[in-house]
Image 1 (cartoon, rainbow, N blue to C red):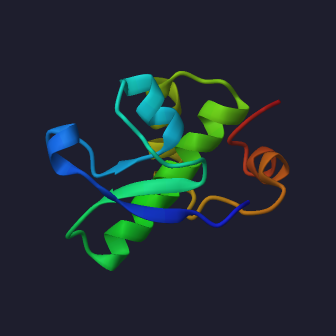
Image 2 (cartoon, rainbow, N blue to C red; image 1 turned 60 degrees about the vertical axis):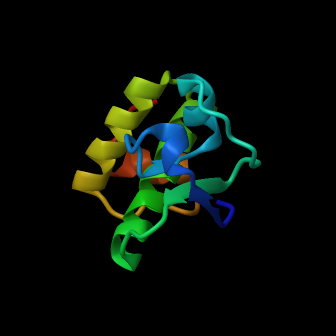
Length: 106
């Protein structure tokens, strides 16, 4: 998986609702996102540890939206579930690894 770039999330644009955003979630939510894929916007002022957690969540969510064509809400719920069960998101052989741990069946 490609390394993600991190950009500053504009708080006024999201009304302090989100701490992170990826291209696919932004499109689904109608949020203006001026970056390419593999870029995550992260709210300024979060700790390094929390920032890393946000990036993992966004890359997991992006995977489900882009590759599985899931809508935002389902992808977000799966990303949250994945975070609780397994961290961080696999970087190689994603489908194989997710099958191996029983997270996806197909």
